[in-house]
Image 1 (cartoon, helix red, strand yellow):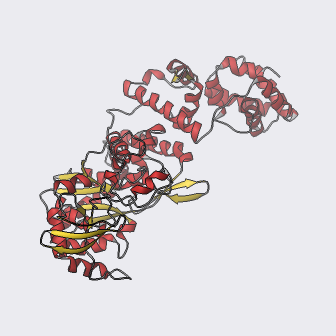
Image 2 (cartoon, helix red, strand yellow):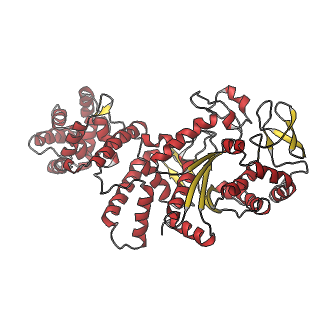
Image 3 (cartoon, helix red, strand yellow):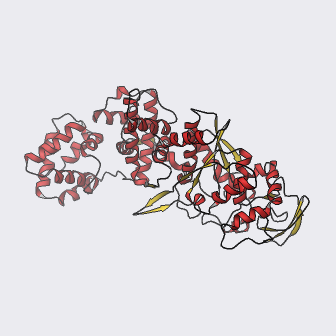
Length: 523
């Protein structure tokens, strides 16, 4: 059974509500990466499973009122002065958006439409300024002793009696590095630890903010949250969920949401897998995903595994990931109307949840790795020459008459994406010059030279398609007593200047008869 269905069924059993609210969110302090997207897509999968059986809503709360904790490596030196200020009040680092928060948040929200995610967005700064938190702030101040008691259960260094569960936004420097020094009636007295200003304010309508461990349970009760995915750091023993659970029940009189803990997505860098981190610059931004692959491939990467399973993400393995998705899509269209076992049913669900816009019939598919070759060979004048693409496909035994409008659009996109991937992460296809080919030819063994000349002769009289060429490579090598592996290496050497390359039969067919015969006959 698909994991999102299991979670949805458990929630419906354990919690009876008129509407089930799934909450997700992020602090837009830097580039929002695909590790962050795991939370949103996990919430989206639960939402899609729930709404088949009950009224449900998916919300996204952007923590735009959180402070900038430090000047990150990607920020200029002048941003040092903004450390401690709410992200929504800091200027955009590139001058293109309303604020620092919007600069990093907007591209992510725009990408969610491509990912097929439907949700309602709330921004924390707007929530505070509209007064959504006012009642919770009042309760937190009145019950600060209870909150401090709860937090101290999990602290090595207990909070003292002077602690208040609130951070005032300094009226002078707009910083959250403030300390409340008194509370009387509707006003709090505070001192700014950055500029030294002292003052008093009514801590409502955005004049103050609850610290994270109090803010989180407060928002659960504000938005009636039923369930929330969370990183394993929040869910660790003594973490913010444990304290939030108690604060929600004992301070805000709210039944805490069910937690769904997800593991990190680690970015493979060489032989190492490193957890993604915006602050450390170890990221692959969600906004950049469609540069290399369709959105459903990202959904598949994340949703095929249970949230509790960590994911190693290697950009060099994108073709393998797309191949897996293509096989799943083929399975779906061949089996969706059949009576399947549990494993088969789960595969169908994974495809359905990975693919927000399922086509009416099985699309015409060209493997991603092959598209990375075609995309490079057919790229002319800053675009893909589709006439050249069709010629290459026909020589590779594809029936292009089967390409419908949907498949054609997806093929064009995949050609561009796969080319982008190849140029940045994969194999750049650089055909060496005639002069370089002659030099490479001289480095070959005599038997390899003999094969190249013999193969060139035989090419003259065969159909120039991938399958025929593939068979001819093995046939001619065998006839002169050459190991086929040595034949492949010889061909790659005079074409690419190295001992390896794309599948040779398909590659030669893609290059075209005239070029291949000319290159193999020049020695």
